[in-house]
Image (cartoon, rainbow, N blue to C red):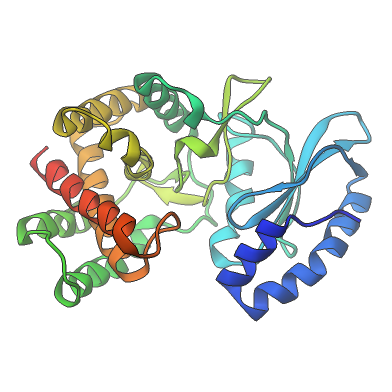
Length: 309
């Protein structure tokens, strides 16, 4: 029987409560059933992400793969749809899927993530080139980002009025303008939805492959905001933050083949969202205290810089 890492058990129960505990009780049996059905045997240490258990396996054919079983949640539904649309183009291959179990059998990549690349320009270039390759026509079943525009607008207005924050009306209005002008009419292409350096792995088949997509359809420039947020601590160390932010946008937009202004506007929208989200919910790295204050203040500063261009 495959063992479940204690850290995964703890964080799942903390996040999901009794529902998470019940799912964890069934998880070893689910894994055993899938191993048998897909004719695989465990082949390495079990790991995990935020919501999914990762079991390295070897297929009967000899291929190395991973079995991923995620906690049943609406945000995990369309991950296999994205992999299917890409067909291995810039992302790991999908071998098998069980949508009822929120499970997939995927190509095994290497453990090195893009986050371990020290050179910032190289990191941004790799991520941008992947974004360009992942922007394929979206299949009909993927949720459209344009459908979230009304929710985005309502939440931004509610947060701006209810929360204590230092964002100026001009900065909030710029995010609202992005929703109105870019959010409601978007290209019909596949968007990763969580493209950051830890979701890009080195591999043998290609140098770098994307993992853990949300599986959305919309504007590829939307992903720039997620990547920029993941670069927060690297940007904090910059001698000239404004210049570092401009460089980040320039390198990523060029590599991704995106309009630089459109990329900036989506990144600014994400920064404003992050500022409000941190004040309401905290972040995974900081739920409260001085570190949370530092991150939210940085999000405020970043949102302001991105508003100026």
